[in-house]
Amino acid sequence: MNFLLMYCFGAFAIVLLVQFTFKINPSIFLMLYQTSPTTPASRQTCLVKKKFQKKTSLKRLKGQGIYLKNNAGRNSSGSITVFGKGGGHKKRYRLILFDRQNFSGVIEFIEHDPYRSANIARVYSKQDNVHFYILAPSGIARGHFIESQIGSSNSNFKIGNLFYLQDLPLGTLVHNVLLNFRKVFSKHVIPYRPFVLSGITCRSKTGGFARSAGCSALLISKNNQSCRLRLSSGEHRLFPVDTNATIGVLSNPLHNRIILGKAGRFRWLNHRPTVRGVAMNPIDHPHGGGEGKTSGGRPSVSPWGKFTRGYPTKTKNFEKKSFL
Image 1 (tube, rainbow, N blue to C red):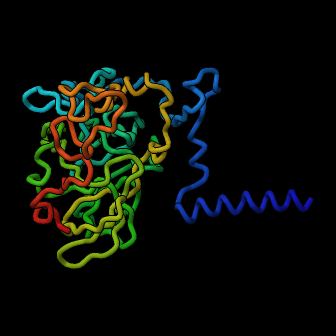
Image 2 (image 1 turned 60 degrees about the vertical axis):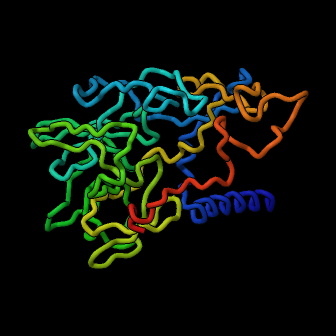
């Protein structure tokens, strides 16, 4: 009897430790599942259940998705600059309505986006009679109503609603922090492509911070000119008070717990095998060649002779471009 009580107390203590120390709800781990180890590949596989992916009669939104040419690992001239990328399954890029100041609607469906780690939500606006996609925060489901509170007198602090940072109380978790300038983020892989909804030209590529799975930013202080946010990386950054942000933490927080388990899944995700430099010939890599098994004979460098450890990668004008 005493052993049973000690076991129950220990399990309860572990749950409290996980919940309060790491700020994770223990029930969320029920979304993970592991397959039976019938093969060596499935022994370590750990995936996330996608309960939202059920059979439905909804068809994909026409005009809200484009096919992008696979330029993985290549620069503008077509030369390979990053090895180990290429191939993968064919996928369609969904245009996300980041800046939705003029739109509100009902969540129709939660969908998977192959270009993102977080899930996306399909929204229908009855007022404008349009469908569009947004980033889906955790806790949102079909039938929820989301709206923009920009310029509204009655603030409704609900997950998925859009606010100015100056209108939010301290301690609020937000995501999809929109920037009011495009010069800082002018070199995206996805080209800037505005699209039209209900006669209004929408910007499809203006989301700046906290857009990945499980990410959020914490509002910790504000004044008449700027608001301070603590990002998921722990960095503190200042934003103008009229910066748009959406309440909530992004969905799919267990994305970093996924273990693909086999090389085939990496190939589906646009990854190719990686070859060590010391296993190449001297013409292919600075570490290549030599008699027998060698260490490369020099500090770690890239195939073009650039240092890979300790080399500064920070932009020279980083502090000028960002409101630190």
